[in-house]
Amino acid sequence: MQKNFSGFPGDCSEEQLQVLEKLRNEVKAMGLDLNKYDDQYLLRFCRARKFKFDKVLEMWKKFVKWRQENNVDNINEFELTELSQIRPFYPHGYFRTDKKGRPIYIERIGLFKVAELFKITSQERMVKYYIKSYEKLVNVILPQCTKASGHRVDQTVTILDLKGASFKMFSGQVIDFVKLASSIGQDYYPEIMGQMFIVNAPMLFSGAWAVIKQFLDEKTRQKIKIIGSSYQKELLECIDAGNLPDFLGGKVPESEYGKYLENEQGPWVGLDEQTYEGNEEAKNDDEDQAQDINDLKKALAGMNFGGVGGEKKKKKNPYDDDDDNDVADMGGQKFYVNDTPLNT
Image (cartoon, rainbow, N blue to C red; front, side, top):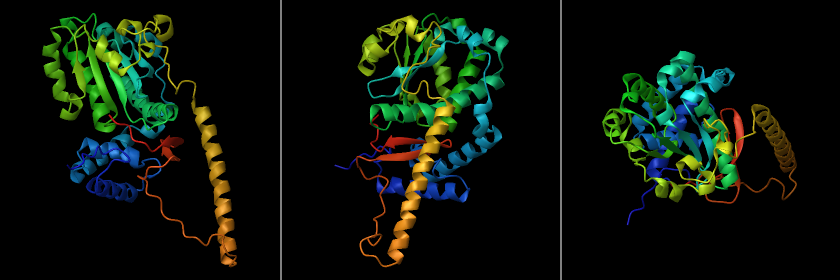
C-alpha cells in the first residue's frame, strides 16, 4: 500500500521534496533569506497549493509583493492603542494550548458589534493589527509551543462562539469583515489553522455560512466543524478541561481568561522583543565560537596534523529523524525547534 505523505517536515515524498527544492531556489534567486524562510515555512505554501509548483510559486510571489506593499518587516512598530476599547465589542484572544500543544485562539462572535468597533478604529488599522498578530503567531507563539511541547507545532486550534448571535448580526459589514480577516490568513499565512470549531451555532447560521464559505478554499472548509449547543464532548476530546474557559464547558474561571479574553496565557507569554533580542545575541555568540573552532580545525588540518579536520563530514539531511534540536530563524529571530512533525 502506497504511503500517504502529509507534506510536513520529515514526512515528504521525493516528488514533494523536489517541489520544495525548486521553491527554495526561487526564494534564493529573489535574494531572500533562506534562514528566515526555512523549509518549515516554505512547506506551508507547498501544502496550500498541493505541491503543484506553478501554483505554489504564484502564491509565493503574491506573498512577497504583499509583504513589501504592507511593510510587514516593520509591522512591530505598529500599536493598536485602542485595543482595550474595542475588546468589549470584539472579545478575542489566545488562551493556552490543546492536547497536541497547539495554541488555542477564541473569538466570542456572538458578542461582536462591528458598528461599535468601527466607531473606535478603522479597517486599515484592523488590517495592520491582524498582520502583526499573524507575525507574532508565526515568529513567537508557534516556536514557543514547539519548545514547550517537545515536538514541532505548526498549527492552531480556533474556537468561534456564536452564543448570543442574531440574524441581523450577519450584515454585509460583518461579512466584509470576515472576508477581510480570512483572506489575510489563507492567502499570506496558509496552513496555520489546524482545526476550527464553530459552537453554539443557531439555525439561522446556515444561511450566513453559505455566504462566508465562498471566501474559504476547500481545504480550509474541511477543517471547520459547525456544532450547536452540544459541543462540549468534541471540544474536550481536543482540549483538556483545565485549559478551556468555563463558558465553553471547561474548568477555567473568568478571573483567569478575562471578561473579554484579554488575559492571554500560554508558553509564549512574557517573552517580549527584548528577551528575543537577547536570545539571538547569545545564539550569535555561540555561532561565533563554533566558527572559531572550525577555523582552528582547518588551520590544523592544513598543517597535516592527523585526526583533526581530516574526516569529511557527511551533509545532514534536514529530514533525518534525530534527537537534536534544529535552529529556525523566523522573522529575524532564532528559535530552537525539534524536527518531529506534528500529525494533524
